[in-house]
Amino acid sequence: MQSSGNKGKVYLIGAGPGDPGLITIKGKECIERADVVIYDYLASPALLKYASPKAEVIYVGKKGGDHTLSQEGINALIVDKAKNGLSVARLKGGDPFIFGRGGEEAMELIAAGIAFEIVPGVTSAIAAPAYAGIPLTHRQFTSSVSIITGHEDPLKQESSIDWELIAKSTSTLVFLMGVKNLPQITQQLIRYGKPSDTPIAIVRWGTTPKQKSVQGTLETIVKIATEANIKSPSVIVVGGVVTLKDKMKWFENRPLFGKRIVVTRAREQASDLVYLLSELGADCIECPTIKVVPPEDHKPLDQAIDQIKSYTWIIFTSVNGVLFFFDKLFEKKLDVRVLGHLKTASIGPATAEKLLSYGIKSDIVPESYRAESVVEAFKKEHMNGESVLLPRAAEARPVLPVELRKMGAQVDEVKTYQTELVENSANTLLENLGTRTIDLITFTSSSTVKNLRTLIPDEKFEDLMEGITIACIGPITADTAKDLGFSVHIVAESYTIPGLCEAIERYYN
Image (cartoon, rainbow, N blue to C red; front, side, top):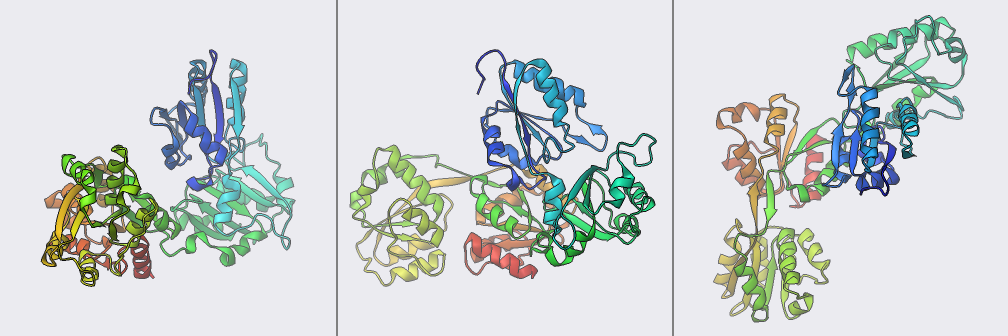
């Protein structure tokens, strides 16, 4: 989206404190429209999914003195991109004007005569305490808040912080970037009159699955934080409101909090599983092992649709079967009216729901979501002489067509889609397995099992899988996993994504 004229425009966007769901609607829209996205260390990489595939994405993170690019270099980069007539989304952790040096970048843009907008973000000063269960104001404690940099050395001679004023203040004190200076901060507060038993809490990686919080008093917190290995990035909260933390803590109480779970489902279909697991507190790693693609030979599906009037039944065994069938139907300039004479069956509520989205209600939805259950359901139907179209995966099990033919039905099994091995996530998977940072791996189909097994070298398999919990969406997937050497711990009773998540939650509870 090149801007009109010779100069582009820069959007200084607050990316929020870490939870990608806390990005503002305007911030998301700016990312979507940008030609260039320049992002910081504390800006969630998950936000990059909103960027256009054509956008240039540049990381300029600064972490503990390790700078990818100096601030002066970042300023020059932003100005240069905008001068080339590009729309620039500058993603900054938290809010750009709360210790985010957004003001400095804005001044550079003003000096260069470049148009810009400020898109405020949710600052970690507010969000991290909230996710730890600490309200910064409360009628019983305080009605004001002070946000203070913790990055400045409190003992330097020319401190810009009035320690006497804030020590005697009744406000909640919030220090950002202050963990390295925690001993000095607590000493200065006590020195200038803050009682040594004043409650204090530290929240590390607030709003993310890595969140960890500790609490104590000004006198004890340094020892507590050291023993808990609390480091940056962290937010420090000082005041009576900290005592509400134990009662109001909610984020860290979720059933799967702290569990790192691998999602092997195809990337296009992983969102619902990732969302449900994340809502339960899990830290999800997307390592898709399969990609769902059209079949190599389109002719059988083309021919089946051309002679659709000759069929009396159509059976869908998956959401993918529905999607690819209707894509081909619409490609041939047809619509659902050509299916009006057919009876339909769907395996699973998700498949039935997807079919219903095209305006077709399934005549049969078996109680259990496997081929054997469909066979059982069809025993109530008169199938002798019926003509059945079965559009499904190239690798599907033969149970259904075999049993239907035994009932006297004529079955055309048509390959509607196929799965391919995805290897580009192998390094991420092996790295996390090697560092023992994975708790559980989910399998939603036999294909995901087979392909993940392919990615793990035989000589390392036993060692890498030691201590890893395996969760399967149903018994067929579980059998495949066992056959390939995995120890299966969880099998969903309801063979759906929600059913799998419920089974995982029950296992850990």
